[in-house]
Length: 206
Image 1: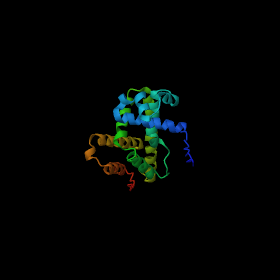
Image 2: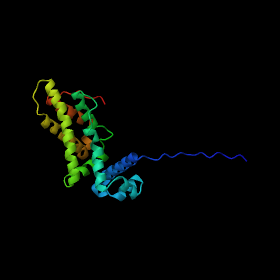
Image 3: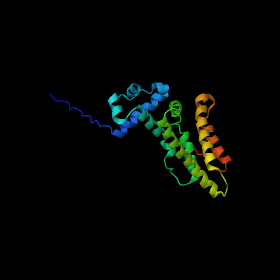
Image 4: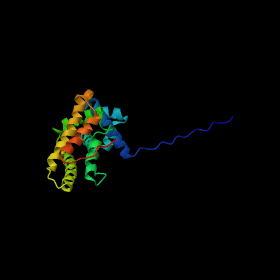
């Protein structure tokens, strides 16, 4: 009798970073589904398909996980720009803000939950303040470089703050009036806003 060889499947253990990222994504999904009321250890474990012990192993507490989620969702806003050209730095911010991979209803609902928590959670509020300052500084630095190149005067901090408010407002507009919302139009609004302040940025063809 000829025996059929047994196929051995090799399983690769996930790294600690991969596990952490999976738990962060599970937390974001829970926030998107039901807000802070759905952000429980049991719900996150169920979403990730893991035991409570694994969450306790990777995060000090549920609050620690929430802080890591906020950091993960804002990393693209505070990271070093990919180019030294200030016009392209601003374009990069706009395109990243309205990238279809992050600009979706689930992420928006998660953001609404986090924004509400920022107002009352001191630890999260502190993290938010630090990240917001870095985000605004990144935009203001690009605007300052453009104004210097054009030999013009510009209140870079004010314009940066207004651009952030516009982007946040467009995210909310999408949540409340998605039927009348155009992703392309939202991006154009941001480019036109910059143009009105002397920072003409070429519209990306993405």
